[in-house]
Length: 161
Image 1: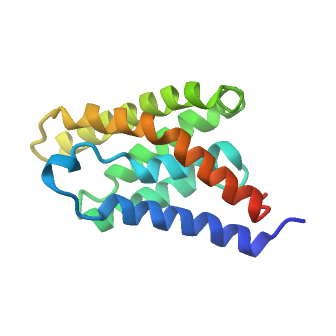
Image 2: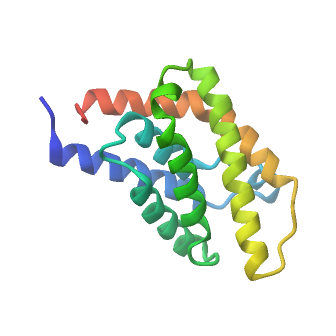
């Protein structure tokens, strides 16, 4: 049985939780290691349900994240849309990878997104390439298996299709 209304609500709720994790204050020493939570959740749903969560959904989530973070409007939306497109165009291949191989892909996709954000910020203001970019991609790679298993459990429990 597919729970349509509850399924959409569950997807939106997981993205909302990821946004809270993205904006929650951390000590400066730990902030450099914050995973790209919104990217992880959106990309999971793009892989799992490409007919329900797509590039447009990723763009909207990125736009909302831009507003929450107070950054240049559209920068994270562009980056998240590009990441979603890259993953959506190869979703059948990526789904067949092991979770650890997918984690490496997520690290590379996160690095791509961080570089797009840097590039876009550089166009509109003074931006510096910072080592934090690489730590974020590494921690994103490391937490992917946990995010994947958690969201898969949610998808199966609530019969989200």
